[in-house]
Length: 398
Image (cartoon, rainbow, N blue to C red; front, side, top):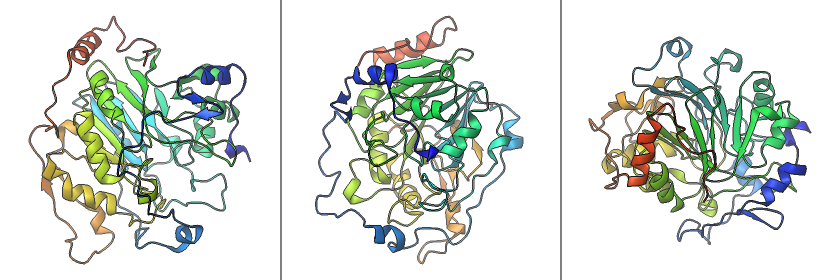
């Protein structure tokens, strides 16, 4: 099965083994799991649970979405625009640079076309209609983030890929030329050759693997994207970790923070955030406009499909969080978002909740904590404003 990918070997494997995150036969999380994240009394869902358990795990009808193609022809007035295309796939426009995160157009988050989690929501636009891309960023190798049919098509484009250590073996096996692949260890950075954008791999608390015998054989990362004017954080998949405070110190403040909020369960609370821990992660990161991802596309846990959105809609504004919750396919400039509307309620009628209401957001970004950028982070952003210097060096020691 080609969708399984290929195990790293040769010089790629040697580089992986040189990482501080490598132990014995694979990568590992080096930060201790925080108390209360994982409920020791909660049993993991059984196969029967996945097949038949839970309530309202999929919506009653397709979610509302819009076609963004016409909007993409005009540059964002603020220089930063995001279009959520489902799950963790986002088209980012950062000062003229187009970035696609964890692209998944496939029907199933699975190596098979016949079995495995099936998407309940189509992508708002066909993959071939995407505008020219400057870089594809892939956080890790799980099927709902690294999709074989999508990558096979993207391999035909002249676009570079930036990903975590080891994941390049899969990309090469699927037709991406090695010279278009950059693999990063945590705290390493890559400056795009023809664009003023730097991608840095940063810590996350997760795992990897696409088969029965390759668990943790490639690295998982969050990603920081920096231009001269803007900084964006993308969590990939992760549990809550205080390493987010270190990310804030090195790269903050962020104009946009994209955190995973779906597919959570008490038995795996240490490797997925869920909405409430995502708010805590945002606090550790120092705030910023918050675009929730990793929901609204696949049913990967027992909770209701809209539970992450409802929790954030309820708790976020009360905590001074500037939520960005657009329709699928709706290009939004975070700096211009003034209101959020629970558009997902138009699909399922939930007793006790109005079908439509909206919340007016604060007129300026409010960080959940009192955060003043460190001298180092302010200096880095100031240096980045000069076109003669890279935003970050090519590699940063942990």
